[in-house]
Image 1 (cartoon, rainbow over the protein chains, first blue to last red):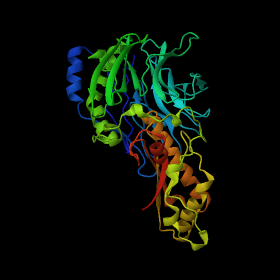
Image 2: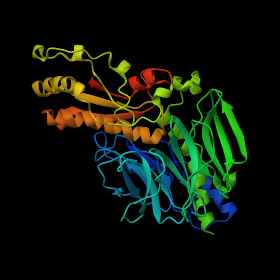
Image 3: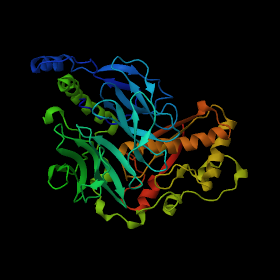
Image 4: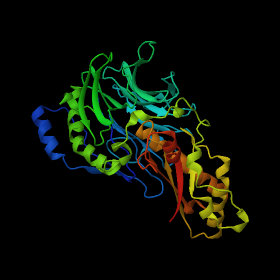
Amino acid sequence: MSKAKRLWGIPAVFLLLAAQALAQSTPDELAQKRAEQAQPRVAVAFDPPKFDKYVGYYQLGPKAIFTLSRDGGSQLYLLGREGGAPRRLTTSNAIDTEPAFSPDGRSIYFVSDRGGGPQIYRIPVNGGNVERVTFGGSYNISPAISPDGRTLAYISRQGSAFRLYTLDLAGNGQPQALTDTSDDESPSFAPNGKLIIYASRAAGRDVLMTTTLDGKIKARLVSTSADVREPVWGPYGR
Amino acid sequence: MKKMMHVGLTALLMPLTAAFVLVGCSSVPLDDKSNVPVETRNTTGIGTGAGANTGGAGQSGVTPVDLTKGGANNSLGKVVYFDFDSYVLKDEYRPLVDSFAKTLTADRKKKVVVEGHTDERGGREYNLALGQKRAETVTKALALLGAADSQIEAVSFGKERPAAQGSDETAWAKNRRAELVYR
């Protein structure tokens, strides 16, 4: 459902949302809307400068989900497309960050250190019980959910290495390492669910990689001495 | 059909993505990653939880000081160092925090910004949150010691502004820090 975006955190007081709920559209209408809506607008202005130190990683779905540090630590907040006041979703004394909508929009996966180290948890979008999702390893971050909702991709620390892993959410499968590299970051599923794009390092250079879900076929898309980070698959894989 | 509803939204966010990256991450390549062969990582960093990496090298700026002198911030340094993935304030930094608290309680016009940082390992977003926690650990201690909320502010830079270059424990220990800056 939602082709969600993750954007990098900024030490800023504005969260810019190119909002406008889009009704069902033909490709022509879409192109027109794109042109019309090329200008970002401020959906909500947070309280400067004391409370909202940073607006973290966020993702758009039926609502916007993002991290704010206004109440101490880092907590998740929800905002409808209409703007208004962000609603606090998590209330822990721990770090809660890196929220990601499930494809059905009903729950939010996020990273929390409420259990000691960072692990991936899930909470219903309307609040409620928080469930822990990852158990293997002491450091699991950056959740991404496959379009069919069945597979969780994430980064797990193994010794000194940070590797791309998947976990079957439907069954009781074991975590699967998809790589043997040591600096994997930021997984994102292709719209067809068959590939994962992620950032990594190879021979001292930043690379963008894709891999099949079984980890058997990998491709290097970009290799550069400049920074490459936070890849996100575009709609329809374009 | 549901798919269609969201394509436009996503597409129009693409230019925004670029804008955010520019604002949030800075378009300047971070030199911590440009020239450093990452595979040279020192194995002393492996598998350690909080408490194992005390990072001696990072504490060189801290020397024992006679607190009775007062206003001894300079000799105490202005940086608090942390263990990997930890935001626990170590006892050895209490004198430093005490010293800042004394200055703040003596002069209510003074303000301190506490900047939290992390080492390069792990996710950027999680490290941003971790840096925030480190900064707040210090501001909370300052508040307990009498500083007013209006005098203290916690901000996080995550892993984006390392104090030391390199991908070994020596550099990491220097980068896991909270810096106290008078404003």
